[in-house]
Length: 273
Image: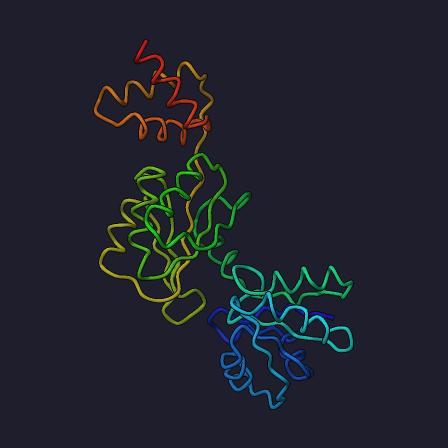
């Protein structure tokens, strides 16, 4: 069978007994980075030297059939560099191929940065959405955030240190400067840090430079029950005070859950009367 195994996201003490036992017994490991897996084996004091197969974003489509073929006759342990395979890491294509061919898939659960960040963020945890990494290009990133303006669930993002300041600034523009957020840095590691506050303040904090592995958690939109005519009035009032029509429609949309496009068109019709 295919065995998806969660590995520590920072602290080696989080390696479960099941993970250690599986590493000691494995004959084949499909790893996101074979060097990382070798270091993990050494760090955990495991003498076993299984066959290591590289399975990463760039080759998963081509190697999935091969790895599933091996799993027909023997267990294949699947590891990402940290956390749970398939969660913003390689493994989805492999699991889909295994399901297609009727090969069993199971999990050795364990650490994952997504629920860990959510738990320490101080933001609502009853409903959330994982958005992975935002697009690298500024225009594409802003478009992706605009599509999330009315999202009522807590949102979890991965982000690179080099882009986090720009992403937080774009979030403040898309969701409003006072929307609550949390930047979780180096989770479970020695220099773990969680910075909480309004998005505008977090963007200013990140401008000084941020290092380490990051997870950004953002509160969902607080939706107000407002009729379309009343919401259009709010849009036009924002326009009267100097806000661009498009931005005003987006802001009211985030607050009410109404369509930004519908608000824009309705406000435009009223203004052009």
